[in-house]
Length: 164
Image 1 (cartoon, rainbow, N blue to C red):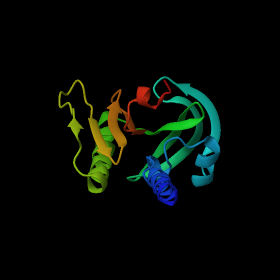
Image 2 (cartoon, rainbow, N blue to C red):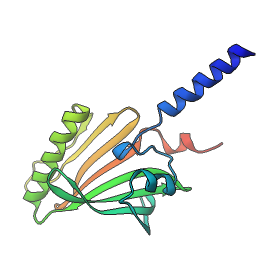
Image 3 (cartoon, rainbow, N blue to C red):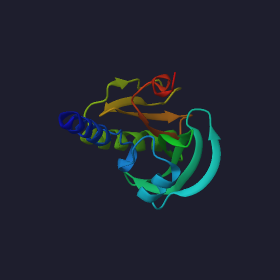
């Protein structure tokens, strides 16, 4: 019986140690109260996002690479599923410059991206890059020419986390 308890304890410890940390160490699956405790500057809101569930907490301006980004915490069934940072640039060139600075920062922290779809066509200026790090997926995009978006998500399929 004693070896079973030791194994069960070690298993539980390893599961909690490998929780998928999203942005600033906030684990995926956290409740809004847990996120608020870990990120006290996050303020309540309630809006829907088709890709990120219900956004229940936001930070109006978080500086990243010298640029203010809005941070939105997306929840499904009261569990954190995504963190999205967005900055609105004044021009496509400014958005490209911000995205390049974010790319350099992410490369220094997570290494080279696993996917790059950068478009050099002058009519379609955009960046689309992905990283995967410790079961967390990061997706950097320039959308509509001037919106820089960085999305953190757990690196597991949504259907795998749903009960049968």
